[in-house]
Image (cartoon, rainbow, N blue to C red):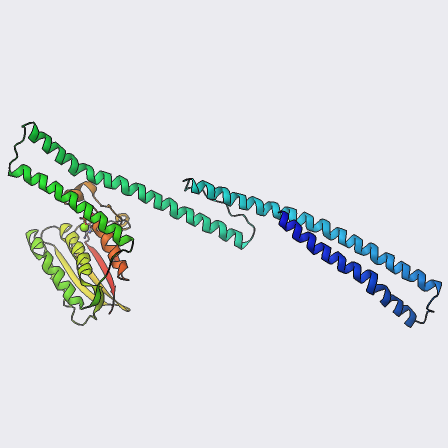
Length: 358
Ligand SMILES: Nc1ncnc2c1ncn2[C@@H]1O[C@H](COP(=O)(O)OP(=O)(O)OP(=O)(O)O)[C@@H](O)[C@H]1O
Ligand SMILES: [Mg+2]
């Protein structure tokens, strides 16, 4: 505010000084010259009067103009400074509140032109992001706690029962204890993997790989489990499809996650089909099943950590809901993508992994 006023004072002072110089030094000379050229004698009383009148008129009009300009600019700068000050105060107040953890606080558009509106919009976008990150962090912690509770409670219950002599340490008990420890170990591993993958902290050992090789290896790894569940695994020959640039182990991990899901969500008698097709600088690998399908609302969320369509049932089937989050992060790390589509419940699902060509 003070700086703006000082700048205006400098501008006004420069303008007034210039005007005064012109009016008192250059103007009278010019006027005198014109009077003489008009044929009036050099020292006539009329000339002296006219010149004095000219000087007075110039001085008064310049003084008035300068005063009016000073008043107008003071008024304009006061109004501007107030409005800018108010908008900046709103932004700094909002920054302080967001800094203190009130992520939902927003600044209104100041209506002072594009730059200020952009500043407010960027600030609000930052607020949205922080709010979302905070929400996800809170949910992640709640989910982890929830996932830990069941196996830990089962372990504690069994140990207590053995201590009390209600349960003997037989093969069944040991199997239950082992299953829960395996589940806890897997949860810890998956959490570490998804955190690393989502932070982009995965070292990829990329090389040209023929898609047909990836499909065959992935199908071979799951075939036995699928057969036990009465699900057929079909690989569509991908001989003509160009090689992809991928880390073989990581790509296999993604396909294994997709196939495990597909087999798990397809009733006996169904089929899981693996195929590859060339795209624009990419190759798309489809894992399609004839199983349960996924409703449109769930489709938006299946890649989120811990998201399961049927929480109780899916957990019962051994899933923590992290597989697709890891898979998608790995696909993105490759410069590819992983998307899901389904016509809805009962219609089967297709997961498409895109990888760049070599
Ligand atoms: N092929 C599929 N058909 C129907 N639903 C699926 C399919 N694949 C995934 N889903 C749904 O998406 C959810 C998330 O899958 P995701 O692989 O992330 O977790 P999960 O398989 O339950 O657990 P995890 O992979 O960590 O063992 C699943 O719980 C399931 O509800
Ligand atoms: Mg899974």
